[in-house]
Image (cartoon, rainbow, N blue to C red; front, side, top):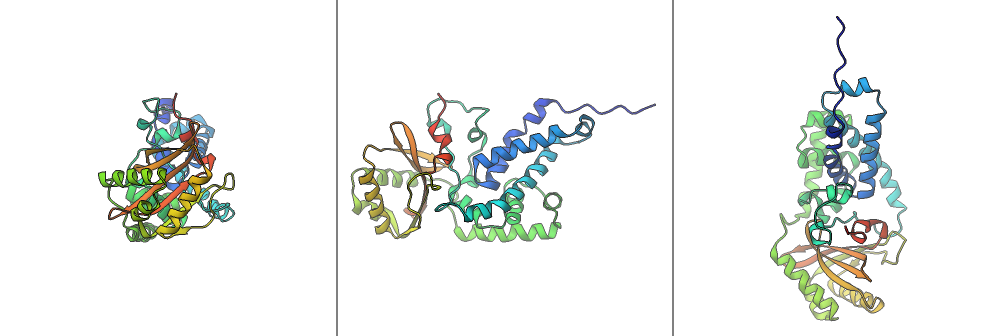
Length: 306
């Protein structure tokens, strides 16, 4: 009596993993574009397998998670080289909150709408992740964010469980050193509202007061649009730069919107988003500003659902 081949998982089961895979890949890569490419590659590898081989896999979700983690590990290794050649500062790709944009419900086809907004997509958190080695980042995200056990992570990254535990601990220390706020607060929204109004009215004194004296600002234009290519340091220099930008860009509309789960600002010209700014606050003052101007990173913001 011959054993029958187990049935292949239903297509809906495989497609149902896309949200999880996108969430994982975005946190690993800090880029929606690269995350979607990694998801597509994972599915391509799944469907490239012979049907009996696919049917023999007990947990397609676990298989896809392993594959996309390894893809992201490779991408992170090459990204470090690419970002050394990047024009100006590289800032993670900002995420919108679609409930704040026209069009209502989330879309099943837009990668931005498949990413769950929580503390692990906070811009300050993503920036710290950029300072980690690829192996640190993968071990930390899989364990501390997605709660994968170290023996399972070890199989994914080809290290021992003890080594993965050390990688995650090292990454955890980096994150703890930044001390990001646990969750958004009403005070943050209030500070950003004052900041927006002061910028619009060219009130440099209020801008300086809202900024921490040691605040920093970076801008990411990717060489595609104009953006300051050095980190601006100090409240007075940042305020002066913002006044300079306001003078060069008449007709900008500033909107207070959620950026990666935190209060942020969006600048639009003729309805098109040209800048998305994320902020980090400490004790009621702005300590970090990340201004993303690279149009390739603003696609989720420039094409809201109709």
